Every structure is written in structure tokens, then in C-alpha cells.
Image 1 (cartoon, rainbow, N blue to C red):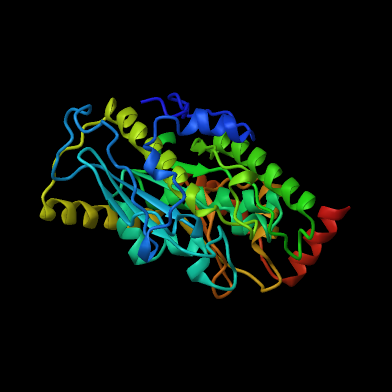
Image 2: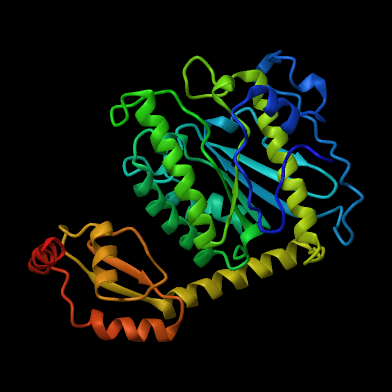
Length: 359
């Protein structure tokens, strides 16, 4: 099926034109007409098309346990079906209104915190891929370069905690479509639009550097609601159909490299327990804890470690004046600790660092 989605093995895509006519012809020309009549069903539910003609195209996929994809989304996905069960794949959708990549005031609206929660962790441990439809709430309140720093840390966190989500096709992140709901930080549409454009450019660069997939969404200003933030209801199903087609194509690509072997409940529990124990041992072996003064912030620590030429996997958020440093291997840890053991992260060292970095 040609739905206007062009994503070869590298998943490199070009942004969709802002022309509404171009969008209709390139993205939805094969979609059932009843999806776009603009009628909002009762009980705030949409009737989505799930028949994509892919049920017999993948060999070796068990009808009992098809591969599962996880879609974590902000309010843009609140009308998506919570579970889509097709013959050849399954999609689990978790919409959270107000979700940001990082929220320092509410962990329930913080993607980073949620990825470490038991409920989300259990889903990620069982899925073959994750798609993030997140970013709109972040770009309204945070500068694009800062969001990219947050996102880089989140990608490292996912790959450190989930050994099966390592390849480019395992993690997908959508672009942010236009937003006209201004904020205190971006009081004009032009300044907000500039931040959105900058974010998408930096996100594409990050996708190449960190080797994950970026999906450009076919949503333009014409599809926005009067609030300038959300999509008008008739176009929600267009977005869903686009994402479902992307994931359906993705399973075909992944199936050319791997076969999904049916597992019993007992086998799945045994595998998850083994992975959990392996993760605990990996954390213990490859981590280092440093006590730091409250004056040190995470961004300062990252800059300081870079200045000291200390290589590491990623840093966790500071907890109770402790900095948790994770390394990719034992050699990297040993080399870093030779330097870290000589460093005291107190107020004096912070003052010295500030003087050095500004001189």
C-alpha cells in the first residue's frame, strides 16, 4: 500500500509539504473515506480502519503472540484506540495529556520518570519497538537545544535499561508539527515557530548521531484546532492511520531480519526475570556513585565531565546529593574512576569550574 510514507531501511524521510492539497494526495489517498467525514462519534470514540492487508505477508509470526509496539503519546493520541490487535502485530497506546520529555515538577508528566516506572517498564520489556509522539508541550516551555540534551539522555536511558531496543528501527520519535499556542517563554507565533523548526532540525541530527528513527508527521497549520495546539477532530484519524501504516511497514522490515518465536507465559516470565537480573548486575558492575554539593546541576556536571575528558554511558538525575554515572563497559569505568577519585564535587570545586569555563 502506498500511503505516502517513504521510509527506506535507513528511515530517512523528507518533511511533508505545508500544502493541504499535497498532504491529502500524498498521505491519505488510499484511506477509507468514512474516516475523514468530520463526524465525531458519541462517547468521544473514533472508528478507525485496521485492515491494512498485511496479515498474510509475514512468515513466522505467531497469531497467538504477534509482535507488540508501544506508542507513548501526549494528548494528541487521546482519541487513539488503547489497543489495536491485528493478525500480524499489536499496538499498545498510552496517551498522557500534558506529557513532556522532562517535567521537573510532576513526574507523572515526565517521560524520563515514566520510562522507569513499573507499569511502563513491563510494557517496554515485552515490546519489539517504541514510538514516541511527544514534544509539543516541551517546545512551548523549553528551548530546542535544551530539549535535545534531555532527549539524548532519554535515548541512552532506554538503551541501557532495555537490551532488546538497540537498533535504529527499535526506537522512533515523531517530529513536532506546527503549534500556535504561545507561552511565556515564546510569546509570539514567530518565536514559537522558530523553536519548533529548530527542534525538528536538531532532532534529525540527533537521530543520525544516536541511530534512532525519526518520523515526519503530515500535519500542517490547516489541521490545527482553534486553540492552536491540538488537531481538529476530523484529522485525528488521519494521524492515527499514518502512524499505524508506519508501524505496519516497520514490522515487515523487522521480520526480514528476525523471526518471532511463540513463547508461553512461563517462558516470558522466565525471560523477563533473567533480563531483570542481568540489568541489576550490569548496573552494579558498570556504575559509579559520587557525592556532590547541591550547587552542582546536571548540565554543569555533563560539561565538567566533558572538560575532564571522562567518557561514560549516561548520567541519571541527581538523587539525594548523589550522582549516578553509568559506563558502557568496565574499561571505560576504570579509566574514568582514575580521574573521578581525585575530584571532589563540593562548592569550592564548582566555583573553580565556573571560573575556568568562563575564562
